Image 1 (cartoon, rainbow, N blue to C red):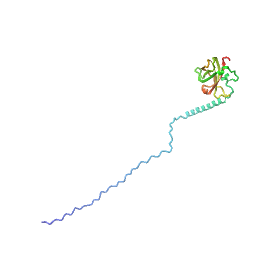
Image 2: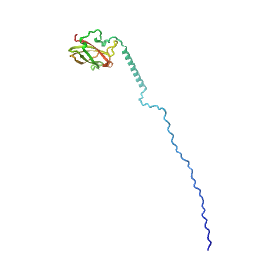
Image 3: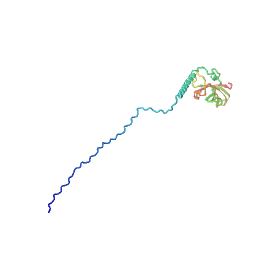
Image 4: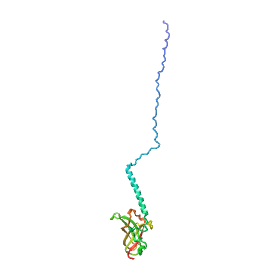
Length: 206
């Protein structure tokens, strides 16, 4: 028989180095820079109406002229110093030494109001209540009334005058309306709570 064969040597193994990895640089993400901070003071937006220069000049001139006219008017009123009421509004009720009618202490004028006269331009009517405080009939009653401001002084002018005529029963009152004799415009007259009246009875005969 043939001699035994020696065992075959094991197959030779070769070491293979690991595959080399390609180097990739790390990726960094950068945040965008923050917005700049707002300014410390922001000028407010002007949303008002922009008027042309020439129009503003006219408006200022008119306003200044109105102020000057108002001051002049006040100064002219304050500078008047007549000792008696003006002739255009003079009434016998304002005259010293006038004879007093016996009925005068019984007749009262109250509730005085001023209204425009619808029949005459720039004219004024006076509405008022006349009261008979006596227990007797008064027929043919007539008189003159002088209207003063509440701060009546000897050197002030009267606001105006009016005359009336009516008849009243015992303790009766009536509302009357008469033309008001005055130099003032209706808007220059005092309010009802700031006036006083002087009454002089002229009829019936005493």
